[in-house]
Image (cartoon, rainbow, N blue to C red; front, side):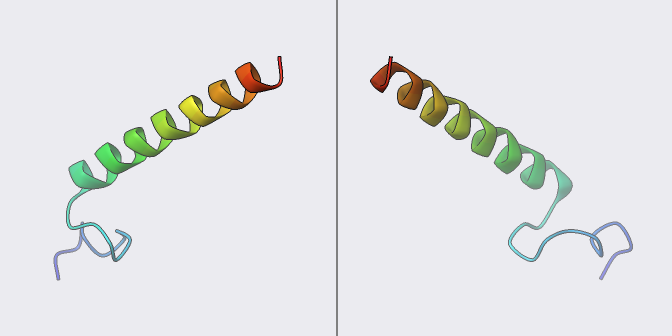
Length: 41
């Protein structure tokens, strides 16, 4: 195992994949919070 991959979570293989997954997760959270806010407006 490479030194740079040692710190990665087990469900991703590269740092780029990790950051893409993180960005998608944040967009999903933003959309959910927006929908929640609109529903209870």
